[in-house]
Structures are given as structure tokens and as C-alpha cells.
Length: 173
Image: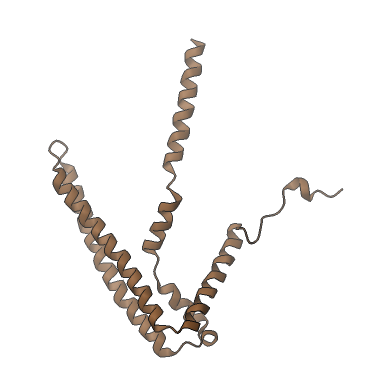
């Protein structure tokens, strides 16, 4: 009897740890999702904040803003299409007994197609923004964004600014 309880506790422990590890999203997947959803408008924010420093003209900012607005319009349309396909998928999944796997596969491929298009559009926008900026401006923006990333690492306890030493090292004698 005691041996059975021990085995049950061990199995239960393994299941709980396995379930908790599977519940955590994969870090690589999150990075990909961040890139897919991140708006390139951040470059515009940097340019506006450091306009004098980077010697950015008003016409450059206007071109980038117009590119961003057209990009956002495309993204809204594609997100709407994905939402419609998600609705279609839910309708198809309502039939528990007679699932049409071909239709489900077609809906899923349409959804992934829209996500692929969104990714490509983001890359195209970045390329267009790079064409508008001069080489010096591109390097300065890259440095400013890198500096901002380092500042964020500080607040998150990144490598650049290590956390306090452990308590035993801080005790005075």
C-alpha cells in the first residue's frame, strides 16, 4: 500500500512538472511573434526625438509617416482577413462528427498566408525607410536603438548592469 502511494506521488510530481514546462511559451517563438507584431514606427519616434542630432529633414519624416500610414492600412486589412478566417475555422470545428479536414486545412493555410504577407510587408517597409535615410542617419538610428536596448536591459537586470551581489558578500565585518 505504501509503495503504491509513493509511486503515485512520483508520477503525479512528474506530470505536474511536465505540464508546467509545456505551459511556458518557447522563447524563440515569442521573439518571432514580437518581430511579426512590432511596428517599424519606432524608427520614426527615434527620428523625431533626435531630429537635430540626426539632421533629419521634415520631408524625410513626412515620407516615413506616409509609408507608416499605408503600412498600417494594409495590416488592418490583413488582420481583418485573419479574423474572418478564424471565424470560418470555428464554424468548421462546430461539427464534431463530420469534420472536413480539407476545408480546415484550406482555412489554416489562408491564415498562415496572411501572416506571411504581413511579415513580408513589414520587411518591405523597413527597406523603404532605409532608402529614405542617409547612411549616417541609418548608423545613428541603429546606435540610438542599441543604446535604448541597453537601457532596457538595465531595468530588467541585464548583463550590462549586473544585479547586486548576493547578501553574504554585502555583509560588513
